Length: 125
Image: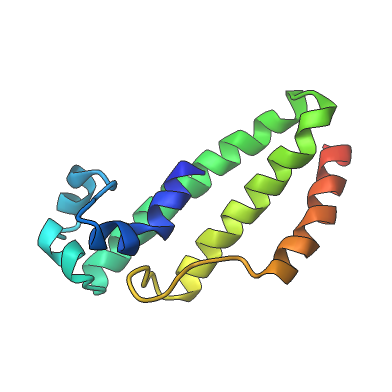
C-alpha cells in the first residue's frame, strides 16, 4: 500500500521538491527529475506509471494469497485495505495517470460499498 500512496502523491511530493519513485525507474522510461517537477504527463510518464501500477498489483496479488493464513480477526481490515488501495490504482488509471493535477481518491460511497465485500471475502477465503 505504500507504493500506491507514493503513486497517488507524486504531484504533491513534487511540489515539495521530493521524489519517492526510484530514479532508476524514471531512467528506464527516459523521464527526468525535471520532467517530474514540471508535472509532465506524456507517454514516458504513462509508461512509468503503468509499470509502477503493475508492480503494485503484483504485490497485492501476492498479499491476497496470504490473507487466508491470517487470524480470522485481522482478515477483514486487511481485505478492506487491499480493496481500497486497488481502487486508488483504478482511479489513477482512469485519470490517465495524471497525478499532478488530479487527486486519486476513492469516494466515500465506494468505500462504504467495499466494506461488506471485504467482510464477505474475509469469511469465505
